[in-house]
Image 1: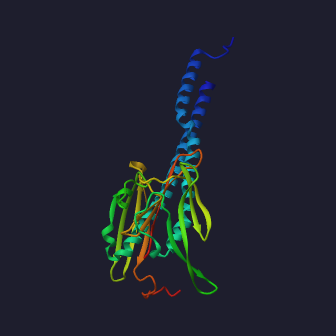
Image 2: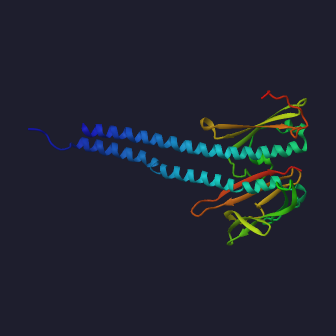
Image 3: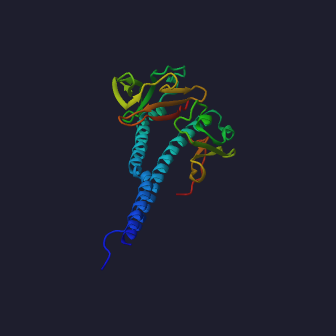
Length: 137
Length: 170
């Protein structure tokens, strides 16, 4: 009887440890994925810098939905970002000459699917040509 | 008279449950090692990306007209001029030439180095030799985007792909 109780307690401890290790592994993996997503989003926004320099008004035309890095950058491979997807949305206000670009990086599948969003604002008159009404501060 | 010792049923029960537990534990025994490797790889990747920050900063400050958009070979150097602002004279000094290139140490690996005014600085060690299929620097002459792509390999670890893309404002 004592042995059975000892085994039961040992089993519970092992299960708790196993669950903890699984959770830590998942957390470490997610941290790595978030860092990779941030780096990938930085490259996507660099691409949008180039688009904005060329044709500011056409930023909306570069919107895409869950495309792999290979397709977005027009390369031969995913640049080391296999399993990641890129979604971009541009919201432009022509009268203000401003655009807000939101980049959403997706990773994982099914219940492990995660997305991280990054936003950058573009202002065509950002070099001081535009009068901006401040808050009064 | 009392019965002493362990019965056969108890031995079988203990053995069965013990074997089941060991089998279940098997997949978790390597978890701590796996977690350690994952953390090390994530840190390596982060470190390698940060090591390229000076290159990205130099490209952001570069004079766009000095960047050649011709086709580059796999190990061709990236050469451009960078203006420097002198705070004391409140004016720009003559631009200095900055060069980034692959410096081979062995047949397979080498370093990414930076040269400015005769001074060479190692940006990143343990870089695999670039190939024609995967050159160190690639350019998009239409969008004026430069891509830095390298395979970084520290001793005892597998290769790590590090990519940075920089839009050059003209």
